[in-house]
Length: 130
Image 1 (tube, rainbow, N blue to C red):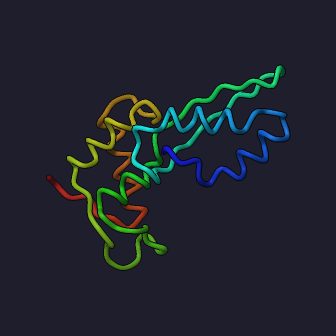
Image 2 (tube, rainbow, N blue to C red):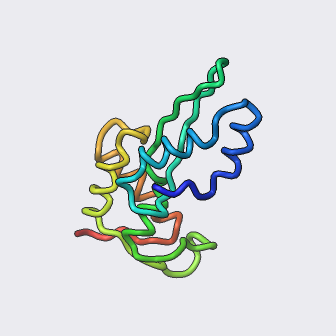
Image 3 (cartoon, helix red, strand yellow):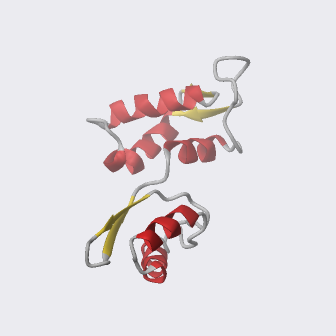
């Protein structure tokens, strides 16, 4: 997400394999410059024996989108106990599903929405019509 923050583990692993860390940071920042700063971005890095690498950025985690849609800072620490801490609408779930579809293990948008609804409930969010 345009700032290679939280990459300590990446640096350590790339250094062990003799990869050019600054090259990765430059390419990562270029690949994520259109994203909102601070967006968590999972990355899969493939290191080759000639000390080159390739990487693929994934979509942010489901929890990031759900918390953003519900406008809450973090999920509940005790799911299923007490009332919901926020809510998401089915239309918000549909929008999230459209973005996450390529990284989700779902056959269609409806299945992705059901998976997201389950995640939302486990975070203490209620799913409402709308």
